[in-house]
Image (tube, rainbow, N blue to C red; front, side, top):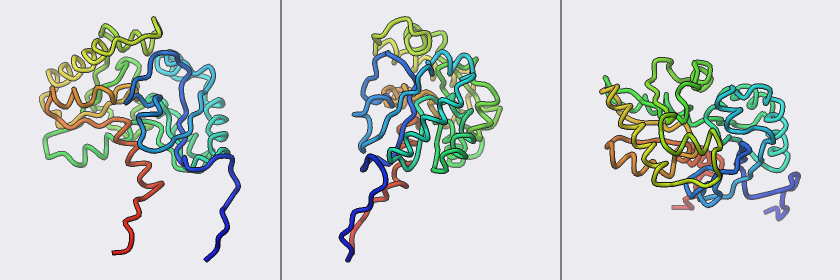
Length: 242
């Protein structure tokens, strides 16, 4: 048996790279940008100038070259697959995958067709996003999401949108943020009585997924569910010899 360790990259043991927006709000456990969220090591790269406001409210205009460069850097460092910390970056799915030529999953929205396939007839997936008015058909099409998918945002809330998108303060009132997510979920169900499961677009929403599941009684999928699935393909569990 060969006893030679393979080289060629700068870092090892963290096959998943995460492209991060440039922001200063608190990232609590469960948030994609909190490294304790993940049960495996990850590589982070902050894309300078990619503020949440610029990406979400202005369609990430002019930022594609910066994301491509950051993606190439992560792959050079040792990432075997890439994701991002904003569901609105589904816009760059095709370009990123073509440039780095490793698996890329830009957005939690990619799960919507998968989840839809699990539901009984007459039920469909609903999406909760940080900003419904900014989630355009282009974002949905890039993630393979049907354009008639019900979507509700948190724009009218008291904390989540104001802190994460408008950047009104660095600190986050967790209780108020959770209430904003719960209110959005209840609004979604009040408007559409055929919802059978939820997908959370925003990568800052996983800390509230359990509370949402308890309040609404529906399955909830988010960036955590997607990335743990994604990583399982990068490092399949070895069960040993029977």
